[in-house]
Image (cartoon, rainbow over all chains, first blue to last red; front, top):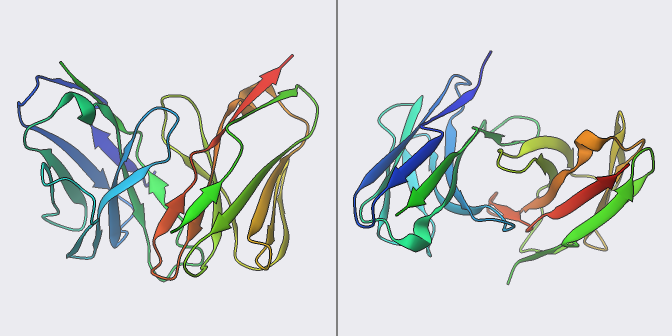
Length: 114
Length: 109
């Protein structure tokens, strides 16, 4: 089945220790998104890629960076995680030009910072 | 600024009907989405409205009034598994999704 896969599902890192979250998709969608979601809050868009074009949200901290080496994979790098970065990180994809442009989400990676 | 408003929490009884409202103020409009999110899981797509009116999909229906900046999600024949958060999201003129904080729906037997 075509899907969005995120690894790992749970990640524990130490304060200040760099961490990388990964996302892959078999949907062949041209747009990929990274969201941060904290408990009982709306998902907050961090970045999105339209094909290879990188779009950084204005309020995304410099501590967060992203890479998309090819259509299928996307990575979120947190250079120096702080306690406030503990959250669920959601990867999503969409196909621009589709009927509704709905976003398909991966299962998320829950990040804990100790 | 852009804003999506929905109630924080609602409670309903198994087998009943519940309506979750969403009002929005965005820079442009290119469609409204409803997503369901169970605790600790990712959002899953429920419905999409771009024209005024009612879209029905099984037990779930979604309504849109663009002139009023208003939508609702109607859930019929509620089941315990419908306990989840329901997120309203609007795609603005830049085709970016503006998300509401979600409505936590609690179903009681």
